Image (cartoon, rainbow, N blue to C red; front, side):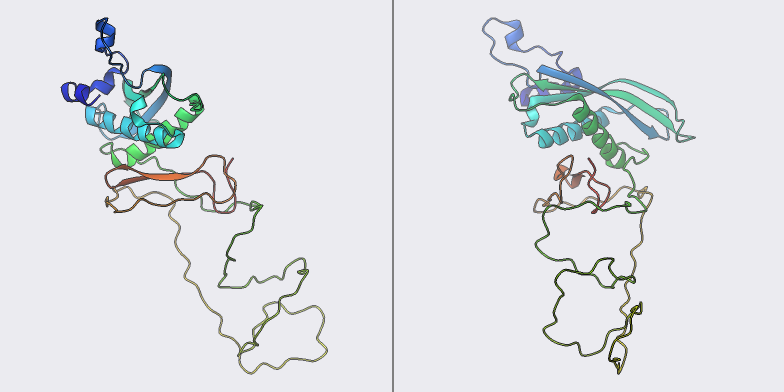
Length: 282
């Protein structure tokens, strides 16, 4: 494949329509990697300010991101798949007035020698292509509107239930104003009394037998509330190459396993599912 790419740098754009010596001669032994297996297609669209098509380099970068994401998600050698962008078209954008939609078809070919355990569905390829398009719009396609989805402004209504408790308890800076609806089965015990009495936000329903006397109230700590970004930054993010790989881990039970990897030098892709830390997205 390296020799083919040297002679024909845009060989990926031909998909599986290239011939090796195996196709031309009886004694040929070379096969074209990434062909002979299933072929999946999925639409891609980018909003750009000018009337133009994707350049050859942009097409190769979109496919490179898609292939690396697919090979990482399904654990196979990246050389066992091929990708190219076909049927490009440009029209006035309906969702972004004043911009133009570059639409096309991403074609992914897979090798016939992939393990039987590697089952790649059309839905999985569609999800991979969507993630690759979003990453490409942010970092690869010149002048394109970013497609990365902004985080939700509001948390989910109900948290998810974890089957196993976390190894370390969570710490809160401020207690909740209303008391718990149900008392704990076993009350907690303090080994050492506090130096200063605490302030009760909500008074108890019944008075105590012996009133307590507070010498000085405990100062209430304050926290700085972080701002929430709704719209992603329009400017390109400065890339930085790190010496070590990022570490990632799923929390709870998720529909699609999360992962992170370096897509291009200094460009890291983070993939996962879920709305926030309380709710897992299935």
